Image (cartoon, rainbow, N blue to C red; front, side):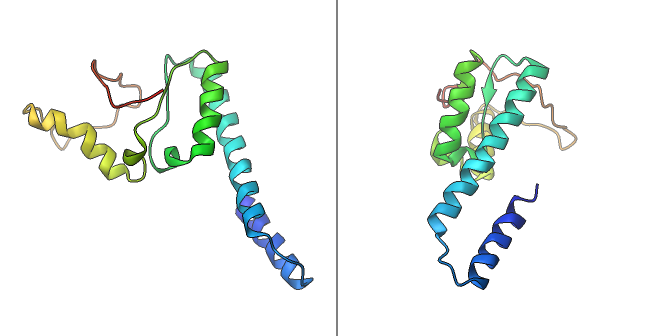
Amino acid sequence: SGLKTAVMNYVHNCQQRELAVNTADIAASFQAAVTDVLVEKTAMAIGLTRPATLMMAGGVAANSHLRRAMKELADRQSLPLRVPPLELCTDNAAMIGAAAWPLFIAGRDSPMSLNALPNLPLPEGVENCRD
């Protein structure tokens, strides 16, 4: 919270003082700060819920720095980490399609009234997840 504002204020202050703004340093620092927060909050959630597996998906899972940090966390917690292939991490629609396609081909569809189940286990034979 407030990280974007802090970065904008820092850049503005540098510009006001006519100081050089090192965009690469700012981006790397921003990434490190966000990664630290995500790993810390994930570690807290692991402590509360004691999951059997840690899964990272969606666009954020395309970040290699975050992937490494989550792998380190999973190793410390003795949890398997499942991360979809990179090509399925940049667009959630592609990931949903990849997950749904085998079910569609098998003739299994779901009614529009289907609701999300956040603790639904992964089916047997899920092969496109990597540690």
